[in-house]
Image 1: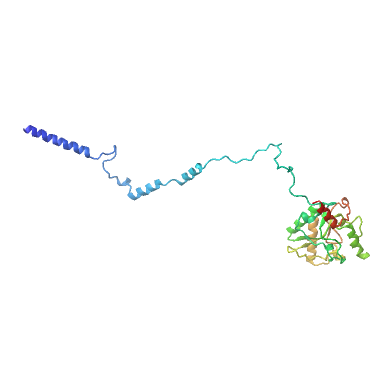
Image 2: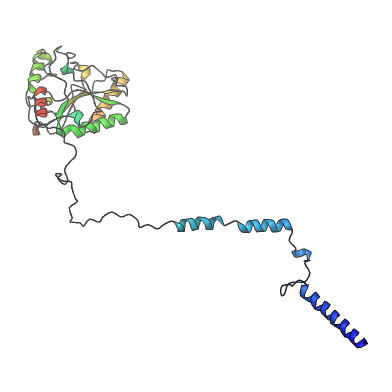
Length: 297
C-alpha cells in the first residue's frame, strides 16, 4: 500500500515539473538572461526614439540622384547633316541665295542718302526760299549723293555722334542747271564763291556736300558764319573769331576729313569727295529721279 502511495506522489511531482518547463518563456540563443545593461552602453528611450527617427529619414542626396536617374533618357536632338556639295532645300518658286530686301534705287550713280541711313538731319536750303537768292531752286527736297560717298558720309555721321553732336546736310547733289542759276544770282566779285558750271563743278557730280554740326537736340552749333556767307570769315583758316566758333569749325573739319573728304578753302561748310574726274556732271532734276525710281518699283 505504501509503495503505491509513494509511486503516486512521484508521478504527481514529475508531472508538475514537466508542466513548469513547458510554460517558462524561451530566450534567444546567446542573448543575456537579464534585461539590465551596463550604464556605459545603455541607451535612453529618448535617444532611441531620436535615432530611430533619423534612421527612418532618407538621405536627400540619394533621393535627388535617384530622381535624376529615374527620368526617362532621350536621345539629343541633332540637325540633319548636309553634305558639302548638297544644295539646301528651298520653297517652291524661291531662288537659292535671293535677297529678302531690295538694294536702294540707283540712277546715274545717284542714290537717296536716307535710304541707307535715316539718322541724318536734312535741311536743303535750295529746296526752300531760305537761301541767298530768295528763290526756291529745287522742285522738292530730296537728298541725293553719288553712291560712292555714302559710306564716307555714314562714317562722318558716326564720328559726329561719338563726339556728342550730329551732322546736318544743307546741300548735296545739285543739278548743273541750278548751279548756273546760282552763279547768275551773284555779282561778278562774288563769282569765286559761286562759280559758273565747269570742270570744277563738284555738286553736279554728286560727290560734294555742304554740312554743319548740331547738338543732340538738333540745335546748330555756333559756327564762324551762316550758310552761303560770301565773306572772308567763311574761309577755312580765318581766325578772327570766338574760341567756340573756331573749335566747332575745327571739329567739323576733323570729322569730315577723317571720313575721307577734303575741305574747301573758301567755305567752312563745303567738303568734296575724291577722284573728281571719275564722275560725270549731271543735270537730273529731283522729279526725274523720283519718276525713274517709282517706275522701277
